[in-house]
Amino acid sequence: MRNILLDTGAVVALLRPGDPHHGRAVDFFAGLPAADHLLTTWPVITECAFVLRHHEDLFWDWLLDSGIEVVEFGLADIPAMRTWRVRYADREVDFADASLVWLAAQRRTNLIATTDLRDFQTYRLYNGKPFKPVLPR
Image 1 (cartoon, rainbow, N blue to C red):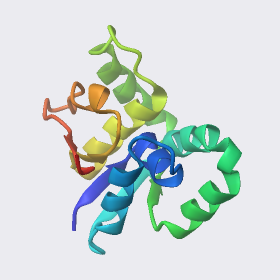
Image 2 (tube, rainbow, N blue to C red; image 1 turned 135 degrees about the vertical axis):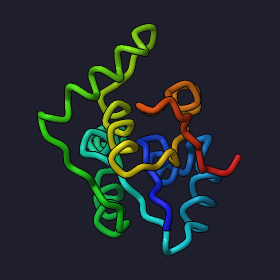
Image 3 (cartoon, one colour; image 1 turned 90 degrees about the vertical axis):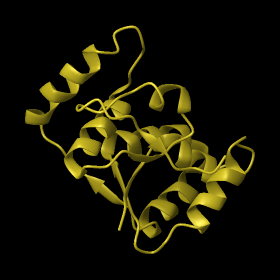
Image 4 (tube, helix red, strand yellow; image 1 turned 180 degrees about the horizontal axis):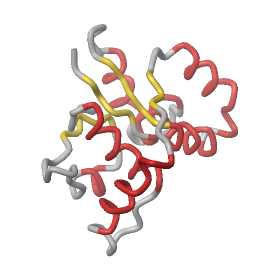
């Protein structure tokens, strides 16, 4: 079983046929082995809900049927996110991305389903390890 982080762009691409990454997202989700485990955080879900607000029912239906695990964190986890974020002071690191880096450390994975290659090929985990995007090219 692989733990795979799920970023906003992958969900948006899947649910918006006009998205330039739609085909890649469809291929990824359709080919996902049953043993693989998709994980995300509430900040990512919130971003998805905002971006897909004109497709709200579609998003909610997908969220309820997707089988993803939405991992919660507490205020005690915020200092680690802030400390990591300082490394990228030259970038606009959003809260959803910081929460995924935190989650990667918690679940010991660097696999991520994202369309945001510019950021996730730059970001490093707390231990310096790079992320490995898993959407097909």
